[in-house]
Length: 433
Image (cartoon, rainbow, N blue to C red; front, side, top):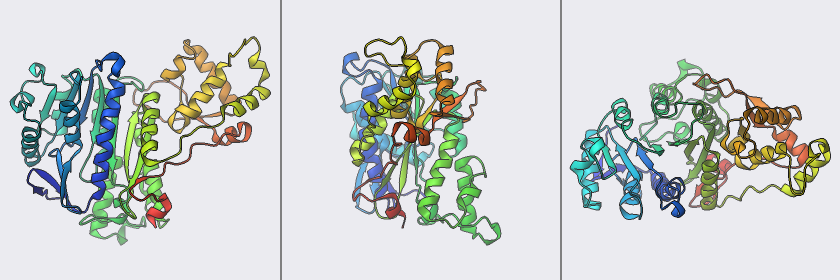
């Protein structure tokens, strides 16, 4: 895929979606930083880092509109250079392409002239600007980044077509050393509809498993998808003649399973810049509060309704069915089983949990007791065991809310699927028709 530039901006043909994506990122970066830096009460003093692994030039030229806008790396720089109290925020911009990297330095020099480019490219440990430019392949970039004390890190994968799962694995392995360790979040951009509708010289996926019937272009796309997933197992679920919106849904659901290897919570945020286009920004995190905040951020901008099931009615039903666990409680005290269940229903993406969840520790400090409480909820049917697997070989039972039982017994519906952020709101089915 030959790269084109207009002035210093990378030129993207027909991708009005890139404009909308960058607007979302431009709003999310300061939102994320404000939370993870400790906010005004901590004088934004906690160390944080935004790491762009596909930084490009920091500017984008959108052919549809003929305008140059800030890319995601540009928004990261704008936050660092134009917002107050960002002294402990590190910006790491990684770009392997020599042309893009050259334009990136020119964009920074022009837009933020106080930044010393020679310092940003110099020795990492002596760099006091907390802005780091890295022109290297991923493996070398990971080794360089590992020298830095990043604090809470947000890694953005923003490929021109797709990010190899091998890259996800390498970065996660370098950062997440223990079972669902917090302090690292990924955002991965996926051109979801392009995999089925195609774009320019990129063919859509075939609608059959019969390899003999695939065109050369379709074979290339299947190979690209193999790289995205890191496996060929996805093919049996996706290569069929089901409606496109169903295949898009299954595509993202399968991709989420891969990401759960490293992350307890995976939140795909959809948006459609124009008819029949659906893209996703996928947030991956091990911190339930951060994911809940991100969901609220997206819902607010996409006009999705807040998820607020009726606590009072559900609690009344729960109490009538389980009077024995209320014995000995006083005043407004609520049983820990209920508190864990409600916390998972309202605050855990996909209703996923295990006894290591940070917010459960606030309810019960003893590990053995948290294990017992979750087992009780599973025995009563409110949760089912799910094996997401983990690369640390940590022996732990994972759970997921049993929405059918929760609906039947507590009259609580699961959260509605997120509707896309759009210039003209459409349902997912309408987008893909």
